[in-house]
Length: 77
Image 1 (tube, rainbow, N blue to C red):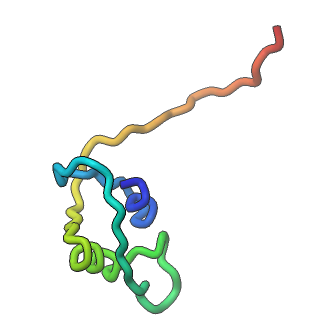
Image 2 (image 1 turned 90 degrees about the horizontal axis):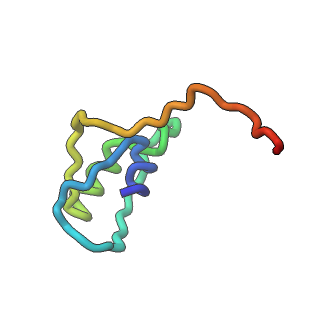
């Protein structure tokens, strides 16, 4: 789901229950006008549903965040 997360510019969680790895192809035409972030729009979601049978539902849930509160140069020993 990493590729889909990149396209949609948000975290995608696989709740299909399917196991294994699949190669899939979907085609869509981005909406006319200025490019949107990550090229996502209604056409993307429609293509995923109609061509792959994937329905995406927006939901809230926990995510992993890495917080770096300090960084230092290594000290030579």
